[in-house]
Image (tube, rainbow, N blue to C red; front, side, top):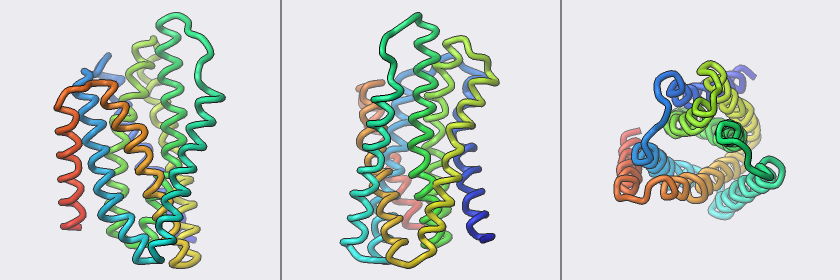
Length: 247
């Protein structure tokens, strides 16, 4: 029970820390250049891709089998698709209003979407710690880095729409809370059997893969289409490989 509490607490802290660091941007800047934001998004995408390919999937296969690992991956992708579908149907605006209210709405919707994405990311933290301490720490570090640009993406439009610094920061912190719940679920389910650890790790890998390919990279290309963003992806992958090799 103490182990579950510690993992859940670490997941909660990492979620709040990552998005919170990005949210601090609301205190200092009104906007982030498209080139910079695109680079950060693709760097985190490359870093996450390395962790998925060189850490999560091999560990999932080691604890179970290829079939179990890939079943988890497909379930993880399906879960994110379901969350996205719910978000688009229920939360996207029906019509546009004034610029300020549009910016505030964009920031709030971004916060809700990121909160939904943080749940399976927390699951990755919890199941990672259940597999090994080093894997759990690696995933936690990568997700903190990944959450920083997400915090920026929440805070900047809210601030530009007239929301106070403190309120914008609060929204970024709140979006990180589901990480704790996800980490608790991942650690609890992973403790039942090695095969379930395999399924949980696969689930986390699938969820992260879709976030990378369906969210981070497309958003980066929409933000800025130059070579710098692709370079960020390459650097992120190289850094992820270094972490995996020397972990």
